Image (cartoon, rainbow, N blue to C red):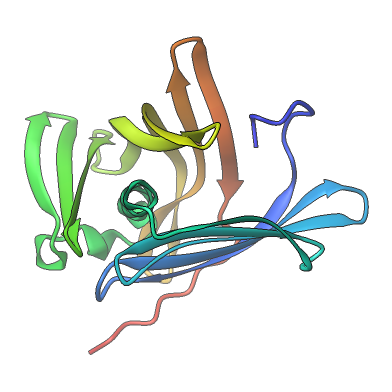
Length: 195
């Protein structure tokens, strides 16, 4: 979490995706200081984005949901993280593609009346190396502001017959410079395919 004064904070998280109607739940445990864990649940379920946090699983410090800006931001996150579920990027899953140039394409996804787009960057062998938008909602002092946002993906590996990036980093692009706020490594992934 690059916005914290003390620098990066270690965390472990598990995330569950569904592609039959886009959705995800992200459960994380963040070590704020010795013996103090903050539980964070972030998600997009049935067209609604939400974010909840508790210190020591008891004391609520964040409870956001039901806001259009949060839902749109969560759907953008889902679209970006389909790099880990590449079949979700197929047109049959509702994603519409528009070519920008040889290495970039615009992906657009609509769900529950919300439409989001991200620019995807690909390397010469077709791997996703980055995502970008000029406007993703970021909460600043209780107000949601559209802010340039990007993510990068690297270190591709075969997992269960699917080639995915296992490292990534996300950042806001502020007028005063880059603000990375998440970087992580996929340690385990499992796919449940439906017939």
